[in-house]
Image (cartoon, rainbow, N blue to C red):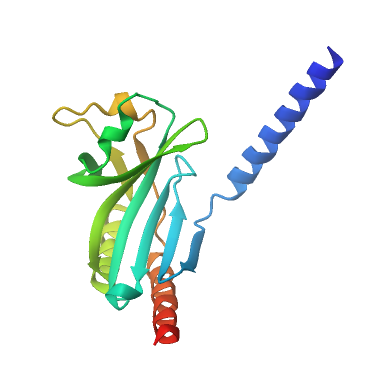
Length: 187
């Protein structure tokens, strides 16, 4: 019984430690780095912290295009979740109807991480467009919604997340500079 109480107490302590850290880490934190021939800027979600909004810039495109994707974690485990790969799934971005292409479904923790692509765009034009879009709505929210032959509740327990983009432009410009540095080193 004593071991059980110690076990529960330790788990409760770790939970509270993580909870307090998450509460303090609510500031918009961007990760900006490089991997081989690309650089990236990433920010974590506010609803599910593990969901990320990603901007990849590749030397293959001469650092002039940005590939925008995002991830959603789901605890749901339908047997056919992998059939979502290469499908266009309906989403709403700040209430605007769009689709996002599922690029991968990977086991993660006790569920799955699903990666979605929004596409590839000219870097500077896209980033300034997103900044204006974010400034107009004062949010950047993606909600996965029901569609023809697609029921969101079957695949996603939390179908909505939002990201803070106040530091979008400087973060992407820094990632773009890193890409150009990689390009110069490879020349």
